[in-house]
Image 1 (cartoon, rainbow, N blue to C red):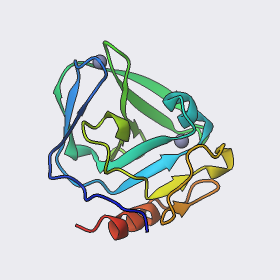
Image 2 (image 1 turned 45 degrees about the horizontal axis):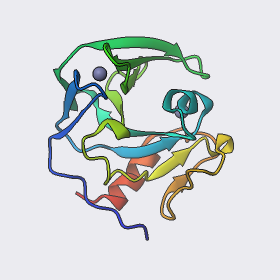
Image 3 (image 1 turned 180 degrees about the vertical axis):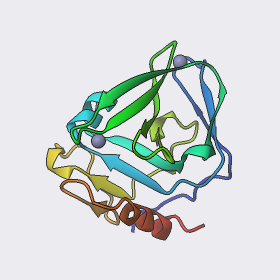
Image 4 (image 1 turned 135 degrees about the vertical axis):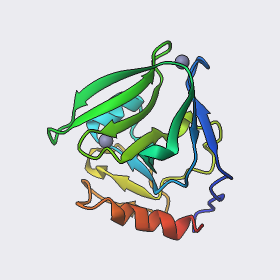
Length: 159
Ligand SMILES: [Zn+2]
Ligand SMILES: [Zn+2]
């Protein structure tokens, strides 16, 4: 089994590269998911982007100004990507069809060391430079129900 440090005490704090934006997370995440789809590769500049799944009310802006970029996913769904208005760091995104869900870029957390993905999706696009840990869920594409990802997270990061 992969060694996984526990989720740190709440709130979790994070921010952008220039320091203008700071945010606060006040509830446990539902998942730490690595997405290898081409859009996430572009937006992350890497083989995958890693996101925390969070209830939208648990994510609050503590300081700074956010700029939104609205993109259309391959599925046709619209997604608002939140970036620091000053430095452009991608902080989180929110699918318009699922307003109760906000996905934070794990690398923007002040302490991201504990956030080892518990699932990897769109592995058919992966190039192998971010191999999944041995206990993760793996999908060639995306599961139809994101709760499958949440269940694995709950198993690997018990409350
Ligand atoms: Zn910034
Ligand atoms: Zn993706």
